[in-house]
Image (cartoon, rainbow over all chains, first blue to last red; front, side):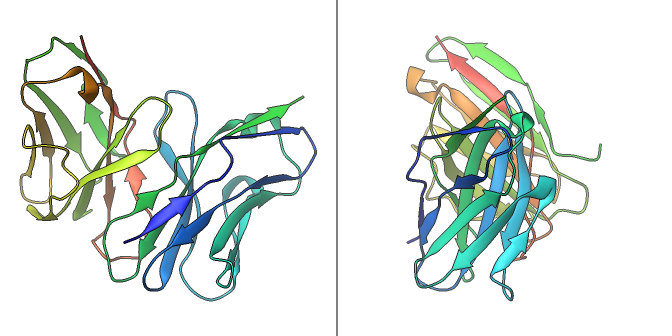
Length: 113
Length: 115
């Protein structure tokens, strides 16, 4: 079985401040990890993924995430948040031996001007 | 088109009616997925296809739900005798192949409201 936990329903930050969205996962084998963003009334958009190699992955719009195997975490970060980053963020995991991508419940990010 | 296309974008129906939701994946993508997103909740996996085969139907909530896919093209999700708890946004996604390391590409969803 595989699962994802996003412990924070909401994250609020001021524009220009660092943004962190937390994610922990559980899989029986080795994980593939993903972050998606959903803007209001839109479909999910891919941000970044960890497959193998360097634990720090960089993605779209200045976002990055760090894979931490010992803590089973894949937190999403952005050094300086923008108002336009306000959206719903989903972390997702797939076991390498499975085909189903499991999503967390999502974290709503609000960046205030 | 270049992206995943879903129709209808909005559907309002009466309890007990049947509905069909359609997904047209990105050309060349052999894997297709259906997810359900209830208001304020995360994505719930329903089913995936590799070609027109659905190896895992365990996510379908009940026997009122069924899905089919024609070749490596259009997929239809059918909900029979709709109930109010079926109200949700139904998202379709496609990827190059099952087991690939590529990301899923999502459509904008079909919002179903059951009165």
